[in-house]
Image (cartoon, rainbow, N blue to C red; front, side):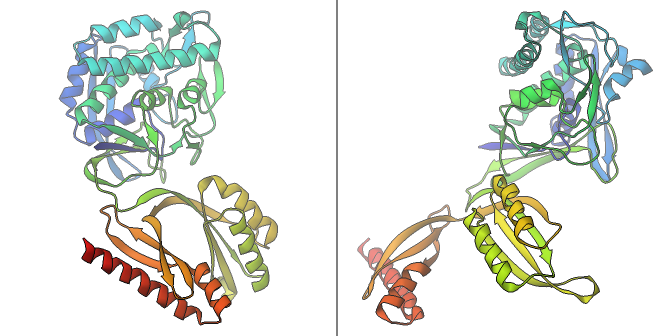
Length: 431
């Protein structure tokens, strides 16, 4: 299976996605043909750009209006520097913040796409994107979808963005699209309805239950056009699976934000045989220099009882030569808030930090080894190929037998391991 993975650490917009496509190998000439087929008096321009020192591709849709300075602001008005994509009911004023793009009805936009000389699958995907956007706007304004008239979203550049996104995705031959959690940004954005919080209403409606967060300077990072692209590609949200990367690309946003790369990264590759399953993991840490070992042991027990996968403590040297202890908690991301509260409530720390990483775990199962004292479970770890790479007797089973029969724990563990491996050898000979 061919995988396309979008790393949305700085959000996503139409121009960022097109830039990432071109940077990953989609010919600009192919997207130019798509643009010409729409018959909207528009063309594409691409150039190399750097964002926080990282080289990327910037793609712009050039229209007759955008040749004028005022109209060019339509593309770069926001902090993020890409086209806005709000839509409006016909009952609203046609005046808006981003130039004078003529409003179009959903049926008019679908007609443009239907009449274009594009592959049928590309047409269907792009039309579905606009249909979902229309449904979102109709719900926001509580009007029938037939009454939704698009202003900024009806602008030429946005139609081109969505059509080219569908065509570029098809050119890559990706079977499954996956994305990281979305940095939607923060602050406010100006549109025809006034000043609204980020993410804009249409963006929020389109994202649904996608995992989102806000990081970096206050700015709009996921636009309605970007959200529409995610929906029409039927993107899943998960950690990067096991893939052999064959192409990658960076798409640049309009502004260069120092220390905050305004980029979208695209990875394309073939799904590889995974040796383990992966899932997100939260890592919560705090350093404490004024607590007793007994208290920290008690807190560790509380954290484990509350669902932490693991808790460990290591000695550290703090500033001014003070001796301290770093406590690290590993858990599911959804437990981060509750475990952090335990850490603050039960310890003397006044600060903590955390991050989300990827956890890899081998496939596991249990077998039984029958010793002279009783049965012991043996935990087995396998690669995806089925090869057993680890087998260990369960501590609690061995501990219970050792206490009941008054034999050394190590002797029980050794005996269980010997029985298990002997059983394996017998099975091999029988086959």
